[in-house]
Image 1 (tube, rainbow, N blue to C red):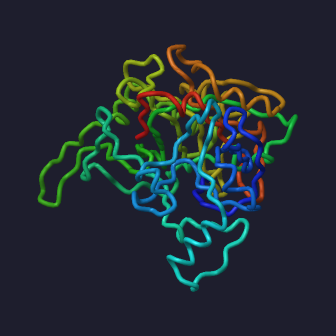
Image 2 (cartoon, rainbow, N blue to C red):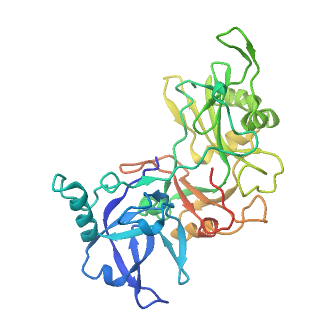
Image 3 (spheres, rainbow, N blue to C red):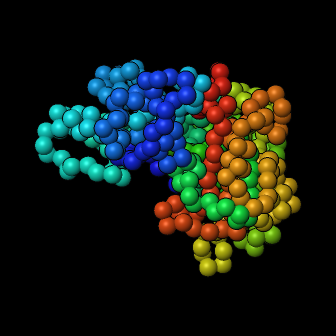
Length: 361
């Protein structure tokens, strides 16, 4: 779901309350701080989003010194992303690529032309999560990777005022997926399938698997029994449970858990017609909770209001010792949007993004 793009965008400007030479530029649901004099004669800009990164010597972004774009405060105002003047970008493109390029316009994605890429987190260094290659396996097609959820600031008009929604807390940990496919149990991290049984190597040796955090959680949380319960309640022999593992040594936020703990946030199943389906937000909690799984914390059920986006900030509901990452908002009954697809959006807290000692593996 989550897309990375560096687009040509319209914007609005308002004066920065604490700096005469600065303005606040608004792009969709995002705002970033710009130098006023660079945009006085501009009707378009090029928006470089959070988590973008470019080489240290990049003519337009050298001031970032090769670091990723982060949420910052400038003179007490939040700034998320970088807005470049459109004419400045055009000059760069013509100098770099000559005249052999299509003239860009509003909505165009320029990440390739500008040599800007999305920052990728380093391999997980958390306890027990460094998985050797011999542990990796191909997963069945049904065990598809759970895609990133789009930020509501990219689609500020998709959620309808007054529609019934379910709002849950977004947890900061490591992704996990567990499947029971035709009676066989599968484990997956976000990007890899993991062996669950010892095996014989090509040389005929018995290789014992190395248990990772995902294996430990599966045993501790009795995930196989949860999946068996779901095969009954959902009348399917292909069940995939998605969630987040949190706790000490997983990320910088441990939610009061000394040991890795799994919280489910979605479930997929294959129906009698062979179609993969997800439960509605309104029935997920009852069905998966009754099967025995811990669920991500519930923040609100009720009519949506833009004021609900403020729920992204504050303390985690699991433990009051640290900030929450944000929230996930989904209509109670599934619906689809032409530009987004399945309507499910996240809103990330500024307090979380600005915290000290942050990790993001």
